Length: 394
Ligand code: PHB
Image 1 (cartoon, rainbow, N blue to C red):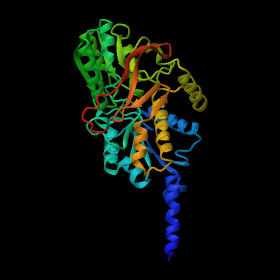
Image 2: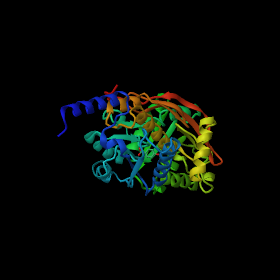
Image 3: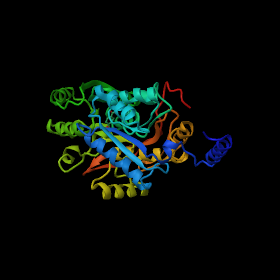
Image 4: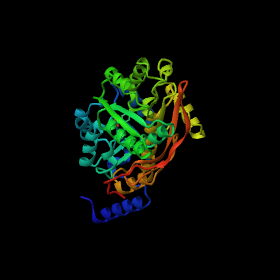
């Protein structure tokens, strides 16, 4: 048994170390930070998942591969963008692998599952894409942070752009699930406020790509313009079908920028010319910060980054800032969350801060497709913050 004197000495040594900020619980001192990546690595959002994974790892690499002074270990789950497996997949990382932080995901329906697990277990969750409103509105949580957007953020400024161009009657078309519906909400709010009318809302289940009947309907309605939310492989198919149906150039096509993001290759570009979108990033942003990011990303991954890569990269930056503030001690939640709430992220999209509800306050750019680029035409909304309605944090 340890003597009383020994105990006192040990306690004094621990207190000394703690006040110097060097002390970590024994298990954490040498242990690696366990990072769970729950992303789509198959299906229509595969490209998005891979870009987030790339961007996240790049941020950590640039910081020397350590988080809060500790080595890292990755655990990966392919969520397949399958909402019915959301809780089960999140629990693989949280309960089985005991991750310190869960990075995920892309699909809003799957995010609902992650969110349930995050709220129940208190695990730190950084959302690198999925925009579901509830995560940073009514169901916001101290341990959940987003480095992307709410679903209505990118489309909020789109309507005014369309009305300014004289397009007062529009059809809205999307996949019928949280992301499509909430993007539609944002679009409607801005469009109606600017004097526009949505003459018809069309939809199909995620991730269906049988657009033909809906395009025939659009042709018969003859609206001034069409606005939409699609993304990934399905977005590429929508753009090609829209052109093949003879609508490109006749009925101008608009959307949240996901429509054309990361997709403009030789095959798709001819069908996409002139499409106008609003988004919080463009690869063609002419800033030193973005140039450096593009160069480093292209060197490492032999491809151009897109908004998803940036969101993953910023998830890495956010985690690094939080972990540095607590010297890698993830059990110091109060200080960890405070550092993440106050983080200023020097992003390739432009500097951004966290709203009280833990969602980016950021500029939204107006872009148009020219060649194989989303060329930036200007800022459609400056320092746009989501309403965060119903969130009691902060
Ligand atoms: C979503 O489901 O929240 C989602 C998916 C893909 C995007 C944007 C949002 O590009």
